[in-house]
Image 1 (cartoon, rainbow, N blue to C red):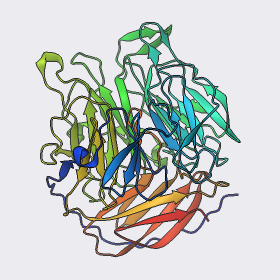
Image 2: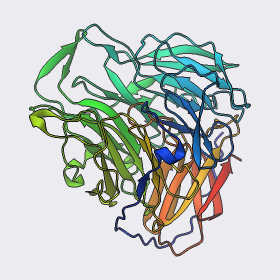
Image 3: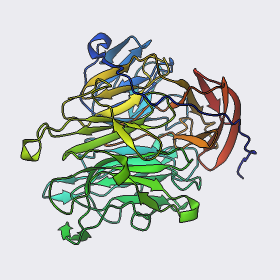
Image 4: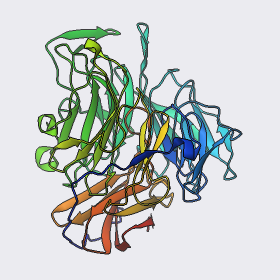
Length: 485
């Protein structure tokens, strides 16, 4: 039975400052950090400061320094954090190589747990999801390929409890999966999975069928790409040319309470290859079909776009986009650089890469947001560096850490959605374990409120399974923990 509470909101006017200020500082040297592998933020030792795994484990010491932990028991690889055993401590799954599961021992060390061998040795991304809402986190692992040899299937491993995972499902068609991300985009209480497929293949939107499986609704939801008349074959599969998608993100980009989708396409300058897409969720009135809003967005084309991630860096209540590239110099001898675009909330974005002092970064797949020093604004990990957000002119903020009870919802809160209504805007965030290609933002949700004329707000938490919980009088400029009641 669903535990549903009446929804009551405090409504305020949200005044936002739209000007951008140069504010990011490359603090890598000061912090003692260097690491070019994909970034996964998570507070593994529960000290209140978010740590970082990027092929190596980095312990955050009070936001002042990152210390490499060399004897943790983790053997390397790229990974994602999630509390699979609901003991209140984040565990780690590494999806590269044969795949490995590491249980957090609570003493700063990890034990390697027996896990089924992956059908691929070169997965590019995985996400924790609770596919059946039993409060136990399961795993979706992208398959990818061995170039010109084999394309591997995506696989779901179901958590049976007691540290036992069993293969549940394989994708019926083998595409070259890159990034994997998940959210309950249609609000039915079950998490869905979006897979970014490479080699001009259509992308997959796996709608949870509530029966331990998925149905691919990418084509009917208009999120599979823009099919061209050209037909190609891979591994005997016939498909219309779409895009070289490397990573994608779910996020509410216009504050209407619906989770939208950004598709990060690498695209050579030749016909038939999709450019990056901004896709607006049509909601229940349009059967959750997406509308392409890319033309108005204003994102300048670059050939080698790769891994995107969204975060509200200036605390104005609107999500901003950081998007990496993987060529230093592309076709026509044109330089490619990662970019930062500030969201305006009306499906337009402004390039603020230079003014925010993150310009001319090298090629990278690494991109993730977290508030590393607990000052209320988001910092950025990319290109083996940490860019600290040092601006004092950002707006009011709120951070929410969700803790499920381990019975109705997982302790990590992964798959939950939080909405805060301010006037006619519904600021929406969701807890995800994967963004772009193989990266992970902090599990603690971050909200910006600009110059909001109020000291508290009310939040609606929608837990996996559609358990709804209202939390009142949340003080701004504060981090709160919301526990499932």
